[in-house]
Amino acid sequence: MGATHLPSTEFDGTELDDQLEAQAEADLGVPPTEMVQLLGPDGTLDTDSVFAEYAERLDGEKLRGFYADMAAIRRFDQEATALQRQGQLALWVPLTGQEAAQIGSGRASQPQDYIFPTYREHGVALTRNVDLAELLKQFRGVSNGGWNPKDTNFHLYTLVLAAQTPHAVGYAMGIQRDQRMAAAQGVDGSVEPKAAVMVYFGDGASSEGDVHESMVFASSYNAPVVFFCQNNHWAISVPTTVQTRIPLSNRAKGYGFPGIRVDGNDVIAVHAVTEWALEHARQGNGPVLIEAFTYRVGAHTTADDPTKYRESSEEALWREKDPLDRLEKYLRAEGMADDAFFARVAADGDELAAYIRKSTYESDAPDIRTAFANTYVEAHPLVAEELAWFEEYSAGFAGDDEGEGAGR
Image: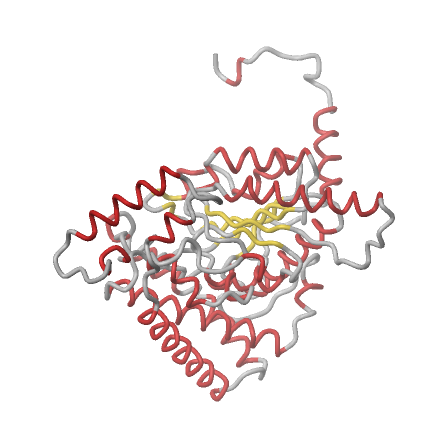
């Protein structure tokens, strides 16, 4: 039986469904636009009925900061790729092309907000003051994480696809309950600023059940969480057109909260949309889904070869939409930056790359005995037995002096 032959209902021929849908959309307050773009590829700044107000808050200093951040993280990305090619990293996950989506959204967050990344949010890590040298330790295989999330409210990378989305919603529900408990106890809510959670995932992860379940919970409990989907068009070798037949942002309507599609290569628009969404969540209005429409210029990881599944002409088309180029055009046209500024940014990038390279070379592998020590909180006889076997096994290698081999 086809869709056109489904049985009729008592509501057929009435305007009830249309009225309910229109009322729901009015309640959601979804911005009336297909895609938010403020800064075009030609460097011209446009206006928007909803988000222009947020863009107007950005002065020259902040815009120069956006450019410096994007340039720094791109230089970092290039250095990390080179380190992997030299055998210093086991794997690397490039972000080139997605700088505006990450810097714009990261800079829109506030210190009390908690961020859940996937494994490509190096730019967001920069905005949260994570030491980028620490970030590389996981990819070098010398750390289980690399940094302490409590120091920055930036969670450790999640390598399991979409697993961070239910974690984020659970954390947001915890924030929500803490605030309710404080209110019930008569604690002044103005003492601690309200917080929201932002969780990142890709277009490929949007097909995972974890994302669906997370959005159901977030909507049901009105959790203060912003879902930030970086639609970079390729889930490894699978194009977005296979993942969805409609804009991913449209899915939010089915869960009952706002969905916004933004030009992910426009750092001004991304910042504006994210600032709006986080304010929406902090004020108790529930979750928001942002789809940043961007592009992964390079490979999925350094183990991937994108020439096997996409055309070079497609890459060339997106390079013309480069997020750094368009902001540079705007800064120069408005007299907000000159050659000296861009030269200084380039020099700072080289300095960062040198620091990253030196830190990586000097990061030694930890003693493997720590893996045994950290298995359980307290000593366990089975772990002790396994460690003893490992010590005996390692001692059998030639050239092993005083258990040296056991520490590798």
